[in-house]
Length: 379
Image (cartoon, rainbow, N blue to C red; front, side, top):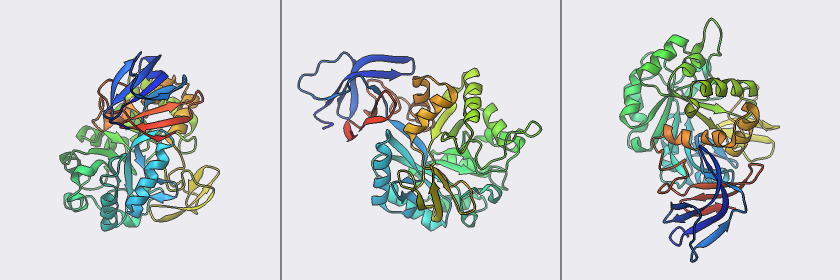
């Protein structure tokens, strides 16, 4: 179908500058024209006045539909991608939680080359046990260049983001190693003080994993990692489910960044687990038992353990929590994460020549259709 072309007709095209009516012509998997388009021999998808936006990009996904990337199963990985595509996600980072090194490497190998997976986010293993959250600290390792090289050997091109705790001895030496394979050094699962986090950000860390979660809180005498992150130039993840962070915190972060002209730094992520899309009950997260109840995923002791969130719901929440215009909210799951990954202009945008990764949204912002490289994945 990508070869034959596709005309998405009668849409409301969502650009960063606003919304305007028009058509979108796709040829050879890329956007060939936007506006009023005539292509009589082309297959037509009637948008019927629905919003057409770039496909969503999720920098932090562990699983969905009962499956976990930690399983190391390519078929399970494909099932996770299909599930999130039903909610508008056309590209994601398979996030591998800390565990035994060989198990992590098996998981990386299983997702390599799966369509819709843009690479791997390593959430550890160089994390602080004091801020383990739902991750198993038995899988954590002291930071060292040698341990990092053993972990990623042969998979360097697959790794896109690496989360580490910068206050640990030797952690700052990892920054050059992470940068050396072309990945993004990210701060997370950290007890870093404001000063320690600021040092890491000056040293080359440029992303912050799930801001506010598994890190010290913002305090007037100790602004902590949250304060350092907000005042830096780093990109920031936010789990916008109303559980991981309070809606007022979302509003505060948005207003702060918008006031600085920095809203482009904010990315909504799901941190979704195998419980996403599933009924209440027992599921798994990084080989640990978790319980899904009323939309919240927790360990037996009550610790939050990832989420059951999807990006379409995160967008709706962001609009409601922070009074965001549609085009701004959509940038948080399109252009902004594309910029983090260095693929802005290629993905995360409605522009001639960009990949035809697209989502049709109903007026209530539920997903009506998802297109990846010109192929309809979900309708």
